[in-house]
Image (cartoon, rainbow over all chains, first blue to last red; front, side, top):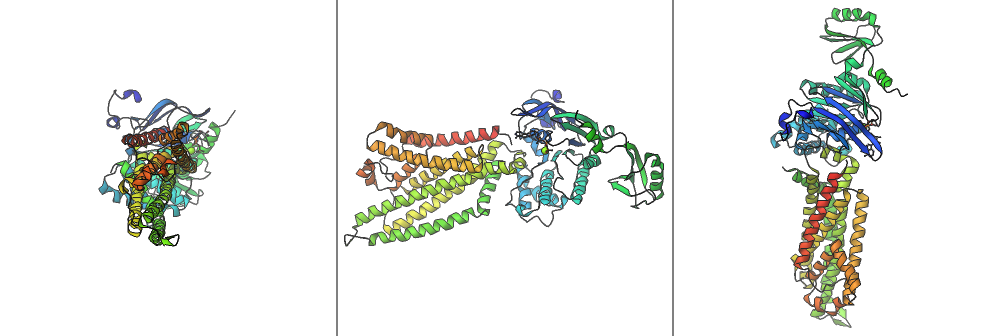
Length: 312
Length: 282
Ligand SMILES: Nc1ncnc2c1ncn2[C@@H]1O[C@H](COP(=O)(O)OP(=O)(O)OP(=O)(O)O)[C@@H](O)[C@H]1O
Ligand SMILES: [Mg+2]
């Protein structure tokens, strides 16, 4: 909470206790257009937070305010405990803009080196960091090619690598998969899960609701600059078909029940009635899987999204 | 490395990578070569069936050099405008600035980095090409300007004036608009300067004031006149030539106060650029 900071204290030292992001009545007005209308948001550390909403809802505006790229016209906010616009804190924040553009005349490797330098990474770490970045996003082997020669998806992958440089405590991804193929989207989900495992907070703007559903712990839904729903994914999505979280699954298809779908540790059968949950669990155990969790009644986020946005 | 230096290096490297430096140097070598050939012909010119006297050849070489340097001053001014116009506006338009300015770098550091990364190559270009030209004229036609270093400094400062003005404009206007506005202002200041010189020659205070105001508004022409004074033979200053307000002669060099004013002007404009970029939404 902003109130916890004693006056004059170094915000960076407060970082471990402060939430990753907190805003209160954050407002942005462009002329007479209210892009963000009193946003109240609290993103705890270490979570993957989904920020959803229709086009023009104010998602990108919120991100720009958080990063100090635009100034709020009202309200306030803190990022990793520091007030909006604080400069040093940005060395701990990674950002992939919605409009991902990097100097076309640089090679991918040079663009990454540039961002390492701008982020203030020590010189001796730069080389390893750059190679790691290229590898994580699957651009190894293309590091010496000019950014201008990259396909759109490759440029977005580069943007992701840029956002992950160093050891950010918060990574803000504004529609990170808008230009990616299905494999790329899957890779991004894996990258996000890895970030969460490392304790990094991820703030994810996305239109791909299935993707949000698969990786986010909490979501907020914004519409016309206001949060219309906020909470854990489970709370938000009651009602639907059963899903099972299990490990040790070696057989990938259980024909008896239908086509098996997986994502991470979650397994489900498309269209399975919830009365058959025990059959699904039995079948999974039967092929040697270790079942950790069964979730009843999840609706798809898309259904919920459309329901929440239903306009009178 | 300080963020200013990171941006400055990036900027200078872009000039190299985009082959701008190559193109400019190649063309400059070509032009210097051609003018060198022209200058070497002056001592062989005939006037009324006779060779030019050494004194006349000397004056002809000085006049021709002023003309060449006039063109060079335009090249410097246009180069400064074209380099600086996209340096900030381009990144803002393309979205490159989103990723860069989300890093722990202030807008002031970004702008100063851009300024430095353009100013250093520009000054190096001015010093190098003007020195070569002066040397060539000295060898080919035997004329050396009285104050070559002063001339280079004035031309370099003129470049910085236009560079800083364009950078300021490009924090708010599109690259194209910022470049065009600077070029128009540059031309207008030159015309106003010429008008002012006529005003002075004919003792018309209101026309003379046009020149003075223009030299204070944007000191590009004021510096060009300082360069003229440093290039022309000393006799020009007192000769009837400057009395009639020729655009290619100056009656006096710049005062120390004027040079201090130019320095303050540069600081002010760069400072305005910083404030303007700082207030801007990205
Ligand atoms: N620079 C600007 N000037 C004027 N209006 C703006 C500006 N940026 C955003 N807006 C307006 O603010 C509102 C929110 O825009 P924003 O980009 O935040 O939407 P978004 O939720 O990110 O949408 P999308 O899903 O399409 O990316 C829109 O109505 C938009 O027109
Ligand atoms: Mg957006």
